[in-house]
Image (cartoon, rainbow, N blue to C red; front, side, top):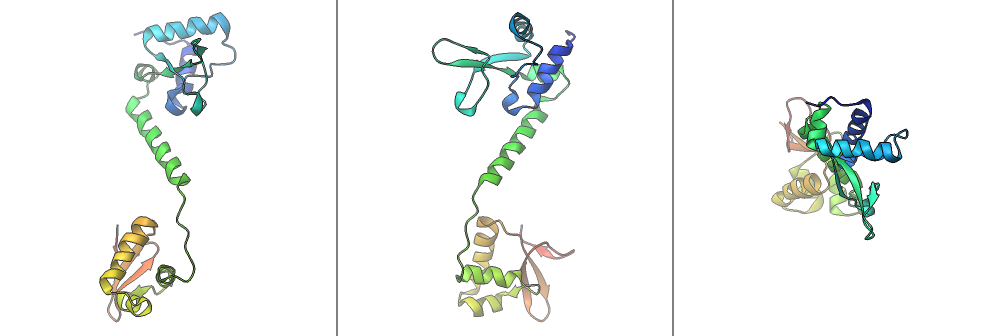
Length: 187
């Protein structure tokens, strides 16, 4: 196995921390013929590879191909292994970051005031919550419809945490919030 130089380690480590394992930009002290030689040696070892750059994503260019396109440098799985990083770990971290970015960019539905859904949410946000009988009385829905709205709309569509607990006097009581220890939770 070939021993990595300080520059090669720096390039591979920096690329492993960037989205899509992009190896660019190279260290500032590495330019011109020295950069070309270092990159060529890393490509020959299979630690990085030259791929088409996606200009729309803002990927940095390594070189222009002459036809209006360019290439960038990407750290390969072999390059990750060379610095002691498991490629599976990097791919998992990237997937988590992408999921978090997608979740934060999704627009939550806006709640209209005065609707039965808004009334239901307000009832479930009270400290004492609401039973199905109380929800049916307030909304004029059937019991199965009320349970469907709690499960389908509140939990799945709006992403609210809906918990329920058995109350001897009121029956099953539903609340929006964190489940108490030992309480049943819709998950």
